[in-house]
Amino acid sequence: MTSETQQTESVTTGTETEPEGLRNLIEGARVVLWDFDGPVCRLFAGHSAERVARDLVDWLEGQGLRGLLDESERESLDPHVVLRAVDRRHPGSDLVAELEERLTQEELRAAGSARPTPYADPLVRTWTAVGARLAVTTNNSPRVVREYLTSRGLLPCFAPHIYGRTQELRYLKPHPHCIHRALNAMGAAPPTALMIGDTPSDFQAARAAGVPFLGYARNERKNKLLREAGAGFVVDSLEPVLQCVREAGQA
Image 1 (tube, rainbow, N blue to C red):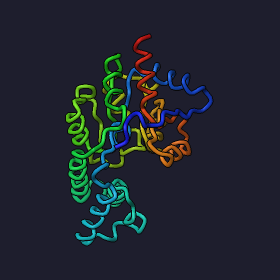
Image 2 (image 1 turned 45 degrees about the horizontal axis):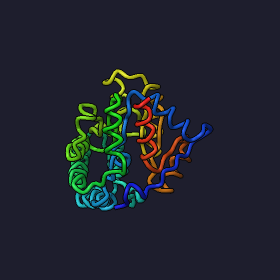
Image 3 (image 1 turned 180 degrees about the vertical axis):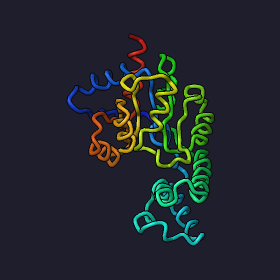
């Protein structure tokens, strides 16, 4: 595992200077909405998401349902692509419910070997300590999120505001449904919130909801994808975010 001190600490922004832009995002955030797999942890660090996707495809084929997926969907390395594809063709069906539960069980197994994102734990605790309210808005199962946060002693920082995948799969991000649920439950206006995510779908959901966005990219590929999607602020380490939160709390 890469140590926290080895993490790059740069911030990519649009037109503002780097420190000023990050400070403005953080100081304006009364509510912080976290994507889960990426900003909080690497859920599949020890339990391959690619293998999970293949297992879902194999299970469908074992049920005689190979024709439900086209070739690109069968070759996908993302289990959510498989799940969405089946839901588009049989929305709300028992088949979709079974497939979603299979994915949830795989995510639960993955949670045991999930790797905390460097600086995420102290950032969560510090943001809570200075008075921000936190929520999780994710395409993962809320059961998985609760299990992981409990194992890290972080659940009180978020509970009860955990908004994850339901069987209404059309509401997965980039649909802003989970963000709207969080804002409504917390009584927060979009401009007073901040979404932290690591995928274009996170950015698109935040933009649709009118919520400022901070991208987290642990590698160049993710950085490029976020920037191409239109994200104006991207960090490749949460350390500068933690520093800004600490400074804001001392001001």
